Length: 294
Image 1 (tube, rainbow, N blue to C red):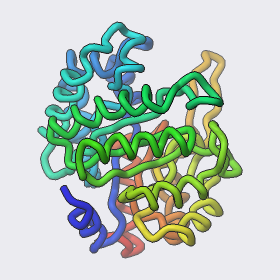
Image 2 (image 1 turned 90 degrees about the vertical axis):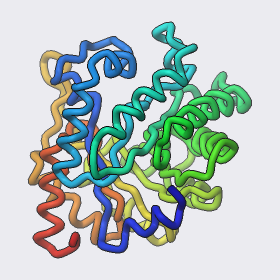
Image 3 (image 1 turned 45 degrees about the vertical axis):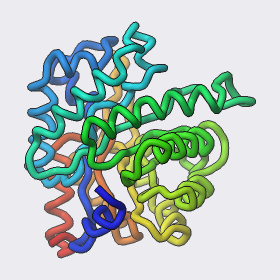
């Protein structure tokens, strides 16, 4: 897929992404503490059922479940030598879902670059390049770099991907309530920088619910001319007595809170933690009722 082909997706209105993956797989039986990427390969029907439900709900771009399938994260499970194998199989599974594009998914290692942390530029570049190569060769239609904690790691990811292929790259950071990033800087600076470096879309995911994002989205829309990605949680979670995060927004409430963000300029939209296919379906219905989505 080229950037021009990616931009043509928006001719009929906003483009719907998917919702949460991990929490829904846990409901389907994935145990806590396992390597999700390995578990999915061993239980392929779980992801096929989930992604097919997203497609039926209106999703046009699904995220392959390759979120932590990089050498650094896989090393926690002794799987660091299976980067190509796992990424290849997970993209293959996602591409079995009909009527959607598949974004190879990459994320933060959780370790800041020097001097804030112990990660070196060359080490992070190699980590991202290895996964990007595997995703590209596996046939991903595009790549998403999501839940990023800082500008520096995001730019390294973009540079690593660009060294491998010319697939469109969507890049989203996760923010605090004031728009600040967890590794320093803010999402406005990040969006401008990533746009200048060639990202096909930039935006936000995770951390906050849609009801906290309106001013941030308005400011982002004024600064960038490429698609604006917004993929928030189903509200701010409440922690139960058992330590479980409970997200308060229903699918319908989530959709209603998303409408002002879309009116403010968000046009690549979906859900993160606490969401499910029902949330994407409600979002599609809300957009159609407002004649925003054809």
